[in-house]
Length: 325
Image 1 (cartoon, rainbow, N blue to C red):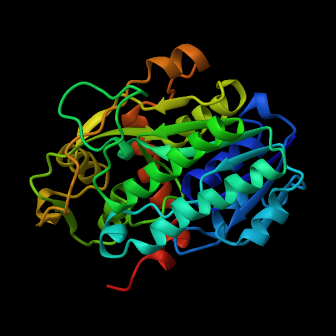
Image 2: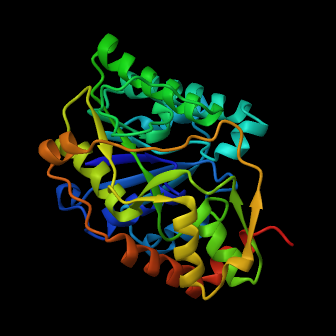
């Protein structure tokens, strides 16, 4: 099997590639992998270093908005797993254009190529943020999309396009929507690597508003395993939720990270809340568990501890990525 992974040098995409090539996904054993990545600021060469020498890995440096390149790259692949996206909410608030052109137009470009070349399965990797905010309970896969940021709106647009290509053209499409994800090799602008690297460097950390925003935290290995199961066992035209049920307020998360880094609350700097900041996300994962047999394996406490240790032990990877302070 030949698998094309867009955004395969980014955080979640590179974890997926590493899992495939190290045998962590038996259903995809023996697959060859092509990574198509634009290597924007959030992608790094180092994220693929553990599997760089594997002869089954081929890396193409390019943009999913480049129709000619995408067409040439998709040709001959059996599956497309689409991770490539602009993904940082704050950046989308200050400048939405790249989010729309990458997450919507880039997705359409990829879908066209997948249809043209007879790709057997197309996996759209998405986010719980497309649903907006939920006060109580959890979203099912049938919940209305109600995004509140340019980032989440662009991801919702890409999802709707993917489903439209399934319904209109018969393209075999599966969508996964994942909870907030953490683990090694995450670019240090997202909350966990931002806080950990700031604290390890002796700097303060910024906490939005009252710190009461609630997120479900999913380890990247569990997220990638769910994607692989949706890819191999999911039903065409379906959406599958990937959440750990490990909800924390941002304030509770901050407390855990402070403790893990040996720091106190004097290192926390309150900042004005983000515009349109969603209060709570929660996914109903019962369909995913029933249909795919997916169960998260990484305990939150153990996962956070291992993640902090990874950043502590891998300064050479993240120090060049941090702005000079």
